Length: 605
Image 1 (cartoon, helix red, strand yellow):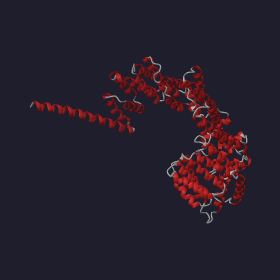
Image 2: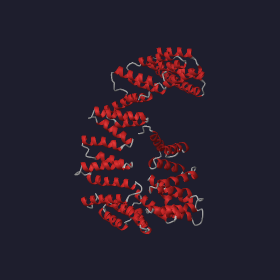
Image 3: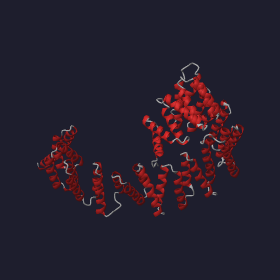
Image 4: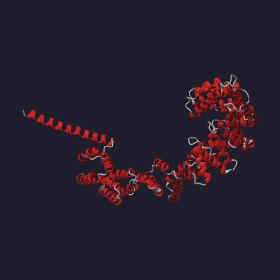
């Protein structure tokens, strides 16, 4: 009998606890349901009960919101007084939200007192102070967030606490100097450069903040020359600005101090090259050649220095034959010094393409490319790259079948590799040049799914050109003539191409190709450095087709021409402004804004 009574008693306890839990869950659901429906009087009833039985910040937040809506000030005051008395552990939160109510009543001084009390009662609870600061920030009260964090430092006697949180607060307070100071202090203490970089990238978007960061870092480097963290951060910052010369100065100092043997300088030079800063890339490679003549880095640095100058020559219009001949002489000196081997075959490959594309010496180009293939025959990838170049040389020479044979060999050899896709793209272009648009389109449709975004984009662009401008007549005469002009341009026969484009435009002014003809004409004039003719063509294109797909391209090209070639600053600014207003979704908007502000005289990083 006693055993039965004992089990009955236990059952009653369990049932009661379960019932309480069910009721609590039900009250929570009812509170939230009424709150969502904006039925504050009923929601308040439930939140009052819930907060008396157990604290949850979300309940208090919703309770406060409903009090403000219903203006039940006296009821709330009594509630907060009782809760602070009965729940001392969570009193800081009650003070904070009481302050929110007082603010809503137009009693800012009394609200200040409640916030002060909130910080005071948090005592030595450091984590609570962090949570309070987060809450103040969410309420758009960064000053009180700062006060809470500073109080945490004070009571813990640790000035290094909350450095990342303080940096965020100073950002809210528009105090970049203290924001930067907190981040740098954190970075040097914990040597966590990635966290600092990420926060600085988010926080220093204003030009004044960027200038301040650069100044502070230079000051720190002078004051603490042995603290490499500041140099590292300054290099990162200068690379973000693409100021590779300043980054080079800092990296050179680190290379000497920490004995990196040129490895980091080499990486910086490659980064400059990838960002089309050929001058500084060449300067850094030249420095490596001079500083490490016996090192493993010497042969590749020597070749890359010449290659950087080659890229500069090829991208300065019109390309000067005398400069090409200088480059060939420098490559030849490199090969003579080091011999034909794995370290110099890339130099031979460059020599071959320079002879073919810029000096029209196809025989010599083929001879040198064969030497490169023989010297690098153990590297299948290198050999196939040479075969692609050799195919281009045969196409330049007017032997498309030989070119297609080489492209197809590489397609087969590198079937699932990016180089195989590149070979397939060249074959598609070859079909296009020959006027076999159906076959070209068939290959391009496959390439749209290529893993390389660049190849996929090129394939898509050419595919759209073919699709938009074929099928309009049975012979596709206009498109065949246009593709023939593109072959002339590939063969560097720019003056012949210009003459053909003029005839094409007069003949096909009403054709869907007319805007493409004008755009290609303008680009060809720019490559010939015939900038006035380019501008006239672009203006014609823009006046007739501003609402079509090439409208923003034409406008951006006009602005760049005025800025970089014609020295017409006011006109360039006008065009950049027009582009930003007329084509807000254009890919050129960000660059236009940057260039506009530079021309206006703003400090642009």
